[in-house]
Each structure stands twice: as structure tokens, then as C-alpha cells.
Amino acid sequence: MAHAPKKTAKTESLAIRLDPKTRFILDFVSRAKGQTITTVVERAIYEAAAQVRASDGENDYSWQDVWNEAEGARALRAATIRDLFPTYEEERRLNFARRHWPFFYTNDRLHAVQTLYVEVLWPRIDEFIQLGDDKLQEDAWAAGTAMQEALRAAKIQPPEWPPKPKSNDFGRPPKQELDDEIPF
Image (cartoon, rainbow, N blue to C red; front, side, top):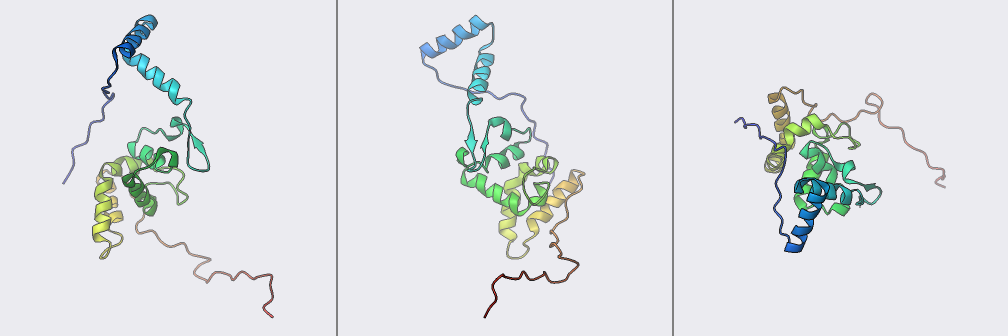
């Protein structure tokens, strides 16, 4: 069944509770700067965010390092950063994407997200994960096959699936590495 495209909002609304003093301060700053309350709040958020870094254990990231217009690309990146405290569901989606990397990343090193694929597949990511879980015993490749079909329906050439194993020197067995030690 075809899904109607979901409209993406250009803005989001946020409801917050402020005590009377804080609300007055916000109005005061807004009037003094000749800005809307929204602009004052947005700029304060940008200024505060510029000071924040999050780590994955090896590297530190700013929000700009994680930001991507594609929600799925942001989610995949954020799920790798331990200081952002990924939830179980975020980690589950990340692990699924890693196992099915040709649909989510440009190569098996998992550094760059395949944004076009992710934009098509991400709205249905939980459906693909569930399909993979349900069909695991009878068809371990079912989720990937379903994702191929979704990409084809979007008129996008899908990646090859299931992935072919890497051959080593035209089918010959790998060379044995020799130890420096002699077994006497």
C-alpha cells in the first residue's frame, strides 16, 4: 500500500512555562533589541549551543557536526555519540543500519550516510526492523529485499542485496602469515 508523503513543517512550535520575572525579561530583551520573542529565543539557543560539545569516546562534536536536513541521517549520527545518551530504540535502529549498511551508508566503514536512500527508508525504519525480526528464521535477507522494493517504488536504483562476500584473490585461499617463531 502506498503511503501519502508526510509534509515536513518549516517551523515547530514550543510551549514553555516561564515565571513572571523570566517572561518580563524575555519581553524586555525582545523590545530592547527590536526582535520578536521567537528571534530572541532562537538566538539565545544558538549562542548556548555553540558552547556545547558531546563525545563518542574518541571525538568531540558540536550540534553542527550532527545536523543534517534528513531526520534519519541526524538520528544515525546522534546514536553514535555516547554523551547524547542514545535510547534503546535509537541503538536498535543504528545496529539495523549497520547490518544493512548498503542502504544507509556509502561504504562499509560507515562514515558517510547515503542520504537519498535514508530519506526514503527512514520513515519506515521500524517497519523494516520488525520485518527483519519476524522473517529472520525463514529469510535473513527479507528486510533488505523490502528496502530494495521501497527504493524501486521511489524510482531509485537500490544497492545490491544480499551483499556479495569479498573475494580474496580470485577465489584462492588467503595466504598464511608466518610467525617469527620456529616451532621446535
